[in-house]
Amino acid sequence: MPEPIVFYDIPRKATVPSENAWSPNTWKTRYSLNIKGLAYKTVWIEYPDIEALYKKLGVEPVDIGPTGAPYCGLPLIYDPNTGAKVNDSASIARYLDKTYPDTPTLIPKETDALHAAFQRAFAAVLISGNGDFPSLMMPETQARLNPASQGYFRRTREEWFGTALEELAPHGSEKRRKHWEGVKNAFHEVAGWLQAGGQDNLVFLGNQRICYADVTVAAFLVWLRITFGEASEEWKDVLTWDGGRWAKFAEAFREYEHVDEGSSLVL
Amino acid sequence: MPEPIVFYDIPRKATVPSENAWSPNTWKTRYSLNIKGLAYKTVWIEYPDIEALYKKLGVEPVDIGPTGAPYCGLPLIYDPNTGAKVNDSASIARYLDKTYPDTPTLIPKETDALHAAFQRAFAAVLISGNGDFPSLMMPETQARLNPASQGYFRRTREEWFGTALEELAPHGSEKRRKHWEGVKNAFHEVAGWLQAGGQDNLVFLGNQRICYADVTVAAFLVWLRITFGEASEEWKDVLTWDGGRWAKFAEAFREYEHVDEGSSLVL
Image 1 (cartoon, each protein chain N blue to C red):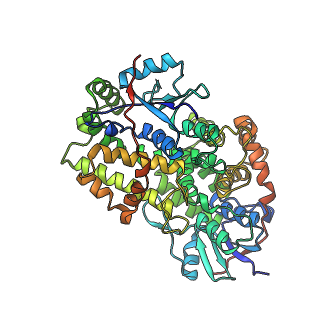
Image 2: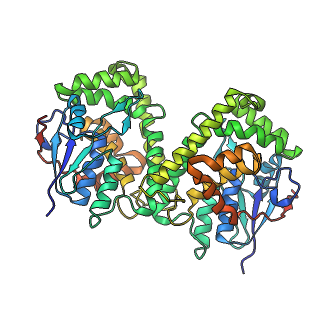
Image 3: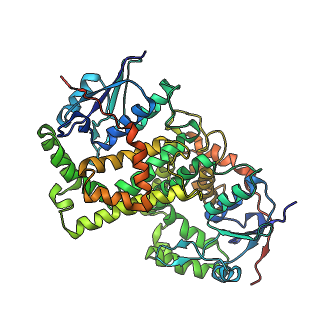
């Protein structure tokens, strides 16, 4: 029986621990761990403490932030069974595939390069482009973080965007409407990829089964659902997009959304 | 024995018929046909005649040009064995996979959606972005077309770019140097996808064998090689990129570069 993997995640304000998890990047890893059925325990860590965690573990940041500086981001895992410390959600998926080959494969070897290209394509559609998705999500996310993270989050994101979070997509504004339309179009483009081969009923990018590309898409959908809430107009709208395709897709991920109570980091 | 597929391609000035083919989009189909070993015959058609060909065959354009108008592009195939007329190189690859299942598969079913995403990723890296590759290739291509196509090509491309072709990347200019650097960086990013899974010696995006994503990349490389020439400084530089990765990659495609003499279209 392997020791539980330590999984560092960022909490938000929540009345129950199971609603703590919100970050799309860490959700990619949580889905990965849950799909593989690997034992893990969450350690919750607030934004301002992430850099200290990297130092404590002796891990080098792999990401470069929008300002060009190295960026200490989560997810990060520590696997006591091998001593490995891995950051970046795609690298973690590859690590888990390699280290635990008897669990469901997230990135089949023959799709290794195509998976890497997928990350670029999905970012081009959902994240870069007109910045519709980040513009909508950043202010909503900031409002729901714990006070310990709110200042850090605001400062860094306002530096990245070059504007106050409140200016990105004010409620009721035409700007907000256009950003929402942009997000809908982005998912419509991904729906096009799913239909490219003429398989009209194809649910997953991995074809018959979930692959890491699906996990990536699901992580952004769950961010949206958890942030706005199940009962929100926004989520209800998502459920109608592309003939209900994303409702079905999101539903298939429900069984992989376990969030353990976890513990807080003591640095 | 099936009848040869009719493959419509755009010629350029060349002293031997085998050096007629240059267009990256039609090269995707030529590679597809050659890899599959299917019998085909080329029909050469100049740019101003493509629209008339679409009308004659009763085919609707699937592409939208940069100006937003429908665009009658090549490749286009007519398969006398099934009566099918297919345009768009990816659709042709999918059609050939489906219709001739005993030939090498270009888009394995389980990578259908990932392949569609790949096209987006590759375009984001090589074509959109700073427009480095088109800026370098358009003027060089125009200079090598037959007079029958030169006027049309110049007019449409200058409309797309909003500038004279000669202004895009003048020889010896800093602009040209930067565009070339951009192209090198684009291929370096694709090299990163090939290495993402930690398989250092991976040559093809399709892993152990060529897939349609590789065909896409090869088609842009062959455009570059045929346009500048084997002996050019440009091609010699490409051969050094990413530790010789692209030299090896391009070499592997040599056996699929057969160009038949073909015939000219009589409308």
